Amino acid sequence: MARCIFHIDLDAFFVSVEQALNPQLKGKPVIVGGDPERRGVVASASYEARPFGIHAGMPSSKARRLCPQAIFIRSHFSLYKDASAKFMEILGDFSPYIEPLGLDEAYLDVTGCEEPYGSPRQLALAIKERIHKELEITASVGIATCKVVAKIASDLCKPDGLLQIAPGEEQAFLNPLPIAKLPGVGKKTEQSLKETGVTTIGELASLPLGTIKRQFGATGAVIHSYARGVDAREVEAPSEAKSISQQLTFARDTLDRNFLEANLHNLCQEVCQELRSQNKRARCVAIRLRYADFKTITRQVILKEASDVTQVVFATAHQLLSKALAQQEKPVRLIGIRISSLVGEEKQLPMFHSGTEKPEHLDKAIDKIRSKYGSKAIKTGNGIFSESS
Ligand code: DCP
Ligand code: CA
Image (cartoon, rainbow, N blue to C red; front, top):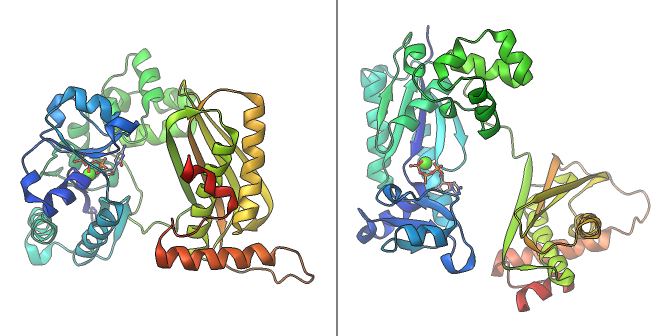
């Protein structure tokens, strides 16, 4: 029996949450994101703002030039997290097979769940209605026999849409669409395909598999299969987070080493606190720097032993920063940290005094105070500079 898979995506998510709280914002060009004065970027734009050319990732200052009457709102992540949790909970009432993708989208395998509703379409309408009733947010739903087609369908019917691709109709649906609509086709792949004259998904599907494999390797085989509407991936709950990251864009580009180190320390503190709250340790530490000219570098290192100690992670990140700064002395606009290769909580008991207990105690005490009074309540010496400058 063919599977029945939904891809459900909330419309203009951050904006919709703000509009639900403040109905005066409904029907207006609204932008949630960073401050236009401080090099913020657009996170979410209402559908009324989009005809002005505004989209996520665009500098907020540009968005304001394009649509001066738009209402700008700063992001409130805790609100979006709460709304997301409710959204996932609603979906869980309709099928146990949920695969969340970020905060506001999910795949749902509803094969066999549609019976009480009469049809997949009726089931999708019931889900949309529940979301609307409880969250005051519209959702768009794509229905198909596989994930990739469901995802493309939901994307095409936004906002407040419902698009069902009947079994057997996948190829006809995909054929005329531009290749950029296909998940897995990024800017580079799109460009290379265009250079060989391939602009639609149908044209990609009709290329011999060998040709596309030669050009793009394993990825080629995947996108070729997607282009034919073939995608055997199951809907499955994701494994736990594979990395934790934080980054910061400065109001002014800077070469001030103390300032960079202080900010890096604060970021390390934040990711390590999250790491410890998950009872995990990390083996890989990476930093990212974006220079004034937008050139971005990543430097990473594998630790000898996984750690959750802020001082250990910071010492490593600090070395990476020093090396990077020694190689290129250019003003920096963004600094970021990412810890990955996370391992579970089983810790080796130190046979001898290793000298690492003390920082761990310090971390514990800091975590406790920060979780009680907020992240600004306490900072260690290395992190103070960034607050006062
Ligand atoms: N987001 C962000 N920065 C981006 C893209 C997205 O902060 N560059 C956040 C804000 C969005 C949310 O993630 O509200 C969901 O992203 P979507 O791409 O699904 O965008 P929207 O939900 O805002 O709009 P759409 O109706 O197109 O899904
Ligand atoms: Ca969305």
